[in-house]
Amino acid sequence: MEPKNLTGVSEFHLLGFSEEPELQSLIFGLFLSMYLITVFGNLLIILAVSSDSHLHTPMYFFLSNLSFVDICFTSTTIPKMLWNIQTQSKVITFEGCITQVYFFTLFIVLDILLLTVMAYDRFVAICHPLHYTVIMNPQLYGLLVLVSWIISILHSLLESLMLSFCTVLEIPHFFCELHQMIQLANSDTFLNNMVMYFVAVFLAGGSLFGIIYSYSKIVFCIREISSSQGKYKALSTCASHLSVVSLFYCTGLGVYLSSAATHSSHSSVTASVMYTVVTPMLNPFIYSLRNKDLKRGLKITCLFCFSWSLYFNFSIQFI
Image 1 (cartoon, rainbow, N blue to C red):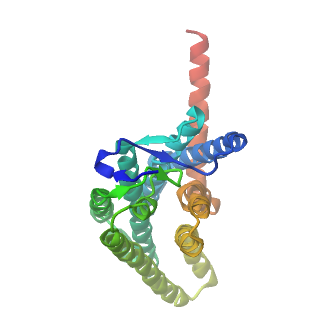
Image 2 (cartoon, helix red, strand yellow; image 1 turned 90 degrees about the horizontal axis):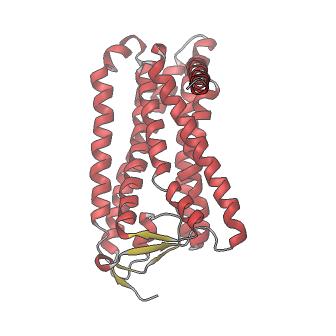
Image 3 (cartoon, rainbow, N blue to C red; image 1 turned 45 degrees about the vertical axis):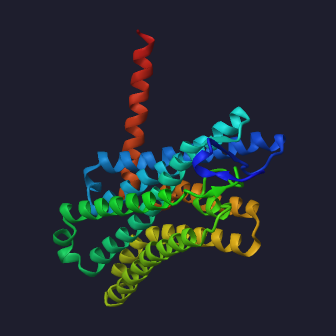
């Protein structure tokens, strides 16, 4: 296909996973199921935290923000892919593609920053328990989330503005992924790659360093706890967050290592499903698996939703 200037392009073609018609129904059903589980699971977390006064703490405030970001993160890409499969179309407009790049970058950076902030929250809670409520006051944790949003917005704006280059019209992915679009560029992409990798190392690498540093301090503090029960309680509060961090960074790193090693767009697309769909879907299960407070909040929320649905259905019958 002949390359064209991006400013004159009106639409792109997302090649997706497979062009075989018999696989489209399977892909549609699989991704629709994962998307619904992701949305309802994370929505339940948000409702549980907002409705249960026992969960009005910094840790659950950050968790509810992470759940909101995960819903937005998957909603940036999956609905468009499902719509294309349903309509048997691979087209995405130029404006839609730029919007996907912007919001996808925005929410993935927000994920990274929120995970870092949550690691700091666990550090303060375990290493400075007596001063936790003083240090992690509403002004501070509200400011931490606000700064995370500002950094993410500025970063995604920078990445989106750098997409003024020549490119082919076919994108071998199921969404407009920034790395793929830069790789398809027909002009010199050295500056684009340098900015992308520098910012990635600065944000992802800096955040990972902050998480590792926080947990190294946490381990040191846990070693000084005399009782085994106290050590277990401290470790249990970090287990869920550590699992999510490991899943997020390992899958993200695996995507770029696999794409760099194989140079196959198909393997890169398949691997990217792990951090774009699977990780946000598993987060609610990981956080609620061994958390008694959150389990109680989720039970209350589910009971309330069930009661409200019964009341609504009962009212409809008499209208």
